[in-house]
Image (tube, rainbow over the protein chains, first blue to last red):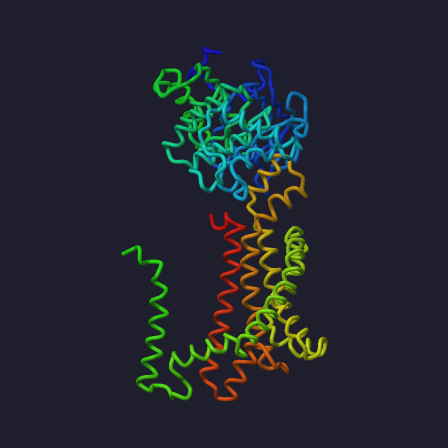
Length: 271
Length: 251
């Protein structure tokens, strides 16, 4: 695994090559919006217990991909399975970019977090215990009795992430979760996400528009082409965790990032 | 100085009264047509404290509130239903917009034929006008529910019914209150007009009209201000209720 640093680009088949066991398998996925063919017979394997970042040119369908995997956007054709099970049979969490519009402002932060448990008909005492355990586990120091609009942007997104995690999901999706936050808060939230990932080991799919972030957080970086989107490359970044600020200047990080940038530029120019 | 900011609205009131005094003092307007502010307020005070103005005020409150309540009871559920079925709303949108744009006063003769000259006509025309305004706002509140919020509920596995009760209804509340405030204002306008002309013997509209007929100008101004205070008060009341129950509105 370690031998590939900045080497030659792999092909789409790389996604399906043997490696860690696949958790999410996507086969023959097709999607069009009007005349635009966004996906055409698209295949991808997402490994279990890994964090995969999705990066690619603007409008290539990064968000559409996770929205289809999470069942928020219907697919035209194709099959998406989670270790052989369908979406309805698994628990998953989804974190939106726009936390302000994704949280329920009429509920306190605590009630927001326990809402998915309520949908699962879990008893009140158990819900409460579950949320408290999660908050303790993550070391969250927010006053969860407050309404979301009384919290800062980063705190609101943290509440969103807790709401996604409270069901103990098999897969966690995050759609550009930090792009509405300022840089200071983004750096802080990256560390939070890394800690959460290290603690839970949940298979995580992160859409990012920031290459540094995409590489820093990922075990694999999925680079997409312009649409119809193909896997331009599926780049492993095996640096050990926890990664720190120094990681950003280490040789393996720099070379993987440079390699991703090269692929990205190639795909952008291929108009 | 900023501490005085909350008191700024008083300046406008003081300015208006000063102008009024000036107009009376300089005899810009015939004193018969424009009594001094003191006379007007004295008429208002004595009228409201046990005089006829007080009972007329209450009659108008009663009619306006019942019209708005009837309108709300009909229009809110209907608005939710139509807003949730967007294609159905699109098909009745023109009809709603058409009658919303029709002056409710033009409907008086029709309602007179249906309900006679009593309270029923006044209240039902006002309810009709208010209901369309409320319906329109509720339906739009439901249709404009934030898509992300609906998707978030869906991603958490909420059923369609659950999304409607847990998300859409609450999302539409701020817009529903906009409709209620506009609705109550319109109901008051219609009720006051109806009280002026449609065989009325009481209500603020009747009071204004009668005072004018008798040339009792201080009484007329008193009744106008009472009507203004009523409109403002009803709006303020709804605003306070909204702030209490829709605490997230505008945040």
